[in-house]
Image (cartoon, rainbow, N blue to C red):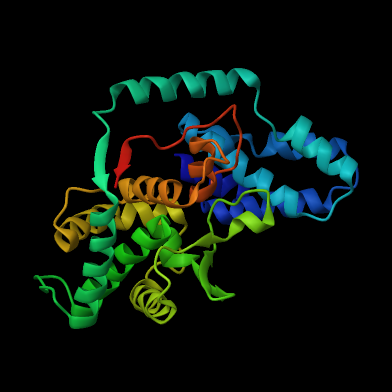
Amino acid sequence: MRNQILKSLYGSTLTGEIESELIKEIKKAKESIAYYEIHSKYIPFFWMDSSIYTVRDRYTNVRNLIKEVRLSKAKKSLLLNSVFVLDEKFYEVLNNESKKREAKKEDTKEFSIENYFNTVEKLKSDILNKNFKVLNGQTEKSVIANMSMFYLAFVSGRRFYEIIKTLNIIKKGGKVYFDGLAKKRDDEDEKQGLLLDEDYAFVRKALKYVRSYYGTLVEDLDSKQINAKYSKNVSRALKRAIDQDISFHEIREMYAEVCETKFNKGEIDKDIYKAIVLGHEIDTKSADFYKSTKATK
């Protein structure tokens, strides 16, 4: 039903395409009052059949896109502070739900930083030496692509759909960085992250393996569709590749823990530092940081 309504209202069911149309309408608007009309038009996109976390993420995505539009300060302020903004009560509900979820979590998983980097090196070695099994329904190319994706997840902390579609590798001043976050922060400088492996040639090779396999398969899919189509298979392949009971989501948590432990010198609050590392927009009202893993030396 939701897709039928979205298609009818906006001509598409894809999040990225709908957001793009919304921004186009904002750019075309001649009077500020039109911003409120645009917001009303897109309320079904933001709210229908969506969890409160999805609603928050959609508003965050659109707000980030608005920040990049060339508008007067007054118009941009109106859009961000009066139109595309969620009520304080929403954040109260969100934080209460986060507390409930936190309370239900199992005991914090501890992991060794040394083992974390050993896993990175083993994945790298297994890819280079083709030390893996190709099961029924798999090809050598698909196995290498998945193992390369897991390697990149460990060294960048990126979501698997970001690795598949948006991740870019950059070498600057002898350091290897990445950008291409699906969810971007305000500060341009903070859109780049430091990779935990500076083997630039191999990082690029791993990304090439991923894109050469998944590229055409996901070309017309957005992040939700990629998750729906591949998340289960990717999760199973991950456990086979590293022989550990770790989810893709937990790799992100572990990556943030490793970065915080190795690079944060106490200058920034731990949770805020991890939020920055993971690419979250810093908003103390809606902070829902990852806290289910803990690094040990």
